Image 1 (tube, helix red, strand yellow):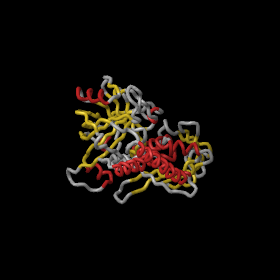
Image 2 (cartoon, rainbow, N blue to C red):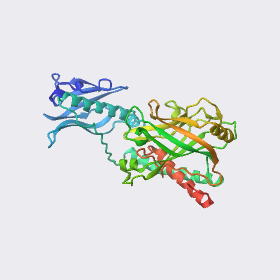
Image 3 (cartoon, rainbow, N blue to C red):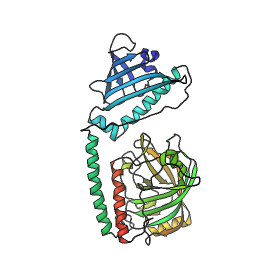
Image 4 (cartoon, rainbow, N blue to C red):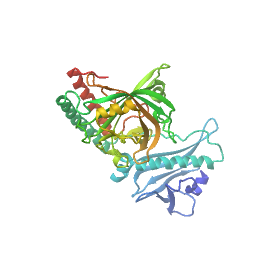
Length: 402
């Protein structure tokens, strides 16, 4: 702690944050000193030292900071003779822009995660000891009366009601299914090998082979060769112990759990991955999740991209013939909302193609979530109840739900 007080930059990741003393005598940190924390972006983050003792010091944010709150750095001895270094902050967004960057776009949140993780790791190196555990990150939220998040919750409920009623009406008019009325079903095999980073999610980290089914369909149902938003719905079985490891409860050996993922043709760019993109061919094409999932503190998107250069027109007959001739191979990819795509496995679709017109298949990821990947964001919260309402229409119409 004495070393940190001599120079905060000795542990700070200089590419993310540089501490520049703007008020106070001498280079050493002292009570009442003020610093500008220079970070990437059109702002600096001014803070003042409000508490100081031999094993800790605390900053309070000043006007102009992107957050309003306090942050404490401290070292603590344990009964086992180890030392724990902790960075603990209590804060809220300082203004509307900061709220958008942190809670909506997650840019500031991602920067903070990397910044303080690096800081903790560097302190471990400077201590002269040996680091014996990983950096642990814990986040808690407290709702404050008048907080915009409370208003957002009411807006979410209203949007859910509108979305649910609209989809239910469309389902009645179209005989039980508002979109993707007909499609083809194939056997699917997921070959997983993970990525260069650890996500804490079995789907993205495990080396495994999981089997399931896939349904490919046209969204609106426009006749070929007119372009349409193409859908790829996946359902697979994976060992239930992966779900129990992530808090899903105990499971017997050999038990399997169902998981589902819905993809549609989107763009691949940072903007395009959030927009549906009509296509006139099943391959080559990019299928994205459009809506994000939460992998720990990160928001991610999932996707599948056809690996072969062969062209398959977006018609049922062309698709069935192509897959019967040769299995359809797609790369499974993952990306943060603003990061590059990285492959974590492959998806193999094999024939024969089957129609589900007689017993329509129904997918609802809210009922069959991917272990370790909860849906994130307002639209994800709206989508689950909407799908459930459509499937209620199905039951009243006598359709089969699988």
